[in-house]
Length: 361
Image (cartoon, rainbow, N blue to C red; front, side, top):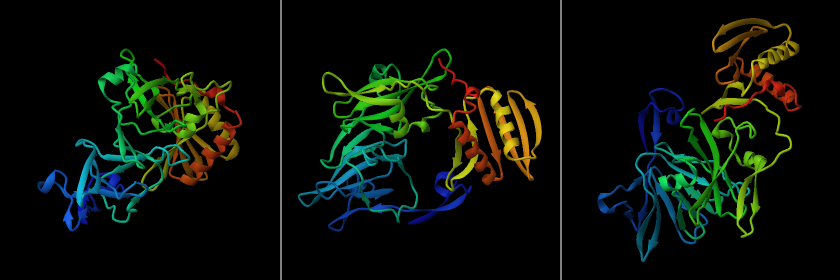
């Protein structure tokens, strides 16, 4: 363990220049330190776990690069899983949540001394977004999804550093989010990238952001995938991911911006919306919370409304350029209450005509 200054919000809890505790793991076999690259290599790791469901005693350890450490003929055997020097290490179970991916975990230099020493929960572990490790056999599969050859096959959709968002029912394919840029408009286009990690083959399933209510990559969850896509079995018996045909898309609702590490609500946001949504939300607040004082300012491309309710001030910011309406307040309880009540009305189908379309290429 050691203590040092850090300016990184994700390691010091958001306190600039705050002190953090860092832990390092040392692995020994018969009293001898296990080192990467022999006696001259590093024998300390940012993180290390026993793999609970492995067929023999196995440790997954690393900092940025990740290694499998086992014993063979009384000696330590070190097998590189993925080696890198320009990114944080990442791990993610592909099938821990009822056969679907769990949360992605980043490995960085922090205090991990109180974390569990075992990894368990699934059969397939996605490591550094490049390798799938079968815990039950210790066999690894390279997913070369960022090679120029494969990206060309995927019609230029690039799943660079994407977390897994779904897994096929037969657990042979993982699903990532891929993006590409239109060379004329420079707008982003999106597709689901499905990878057969045993055969290292992939294909893209493009989708329309408006039809799928897709604002940011963080909207891509297993639930979202199941809502707008489904798996079919083709004539060859292979599972294929396709867009689901919906007679009626789900109603638009708001979204919350929440900041770590304390999960504090920053704002309630509606997107993509027309300017009519401003009047709809103001009238809604006036009806639910009379009396309301209103001050309006025009600062193109923004229209700003300040609402005062019982001495609590809310800012209502409409931006025509990005079709966004954001509601903010220091009174987080009031902000949460208004957002939840407005969402309740949206779920009943009200105010849906105030929503527009995401820009498409």
